[in-house]
Image (cartoon, rainbow, N blue to C red):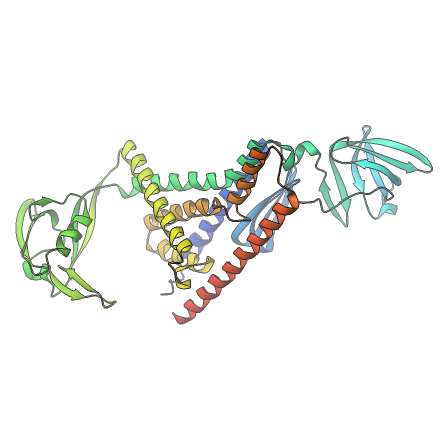
Length: 426
């Protein structure tokens, strides 16, 4: 069923994607900066660029589709601009240090020193030697100097500002921090959900279906179910379902609260067929929990318990994937996620908060899986480096991540194509 497109639903859906991605990437960004790593770019979204600005050392970019993002750290990938001996460049020297290196349009750099590069080290010694009119001149390079080429400016990355220069622990924290922020967000939302939804204390009847055993027995909407066959119900709706499922054709004694009094009602469940053709045993009622406000301890405890139950459910889903116990229709891409998000956003704030917590937790767990190109795989490589005492060959690691990324993209294309077909099928 296609969700109703409402301005509120659209805004809340886009906002959720934006928040989940931003807090994930902010985790990488914050702990990379704490470790002293130069972060070149903090980007949210894919597709056409909406906004981009430079603040300090980092370029911040917002793109049209908030379905992902990245934090580009110096040293993770080969630098796109390199200076080689024999190359003619111009340098802007101020205070006995090179502040800018110009690689093109040299004739326009009137106030810069121009010469042929004899030697240059932009990582460790931070020096450059130029042949200036037949004389070798050596200059110190500012650690925050910029390189200008093809009308683009990029800050250099000395070795102590690069990702690879940091300890295994610092690098691992910069990688793990993304999923960690999603876990923290999920926990906060689950706790918030517990406080907003309250603590269930009883189960009440909110609907009695026509021509069903409950209506025939005299059960009414608003009745509070106190006990069934002598068993106290409390807030456990699953106990009602269990007792009814074992009582097809057998009279059951229901004690309900109505207008401050206890009323005894005898109901005989009957077997019927649901919309999917399955045999089910029903009495024909809809139920809802009656709640009270949660204490601080109850809110935190319930939030933790809900998060644990959600984690178990997510891992059970991954287990089915590993065992092949699924069809393509069981999988969903961004379109399916957006569809469900819009449905729950339209349904109410409680549903929306619960779903946001689930998505944040799922994003964290999925990213921690040891799948190439994901954070979990990168942590595996860092763990191997810690054990071996030396890093894995960067070329081999890059190849593994490239293959993993390609496989994930193929899966994404497949599930998105299936989502589009499903939308057309209605």
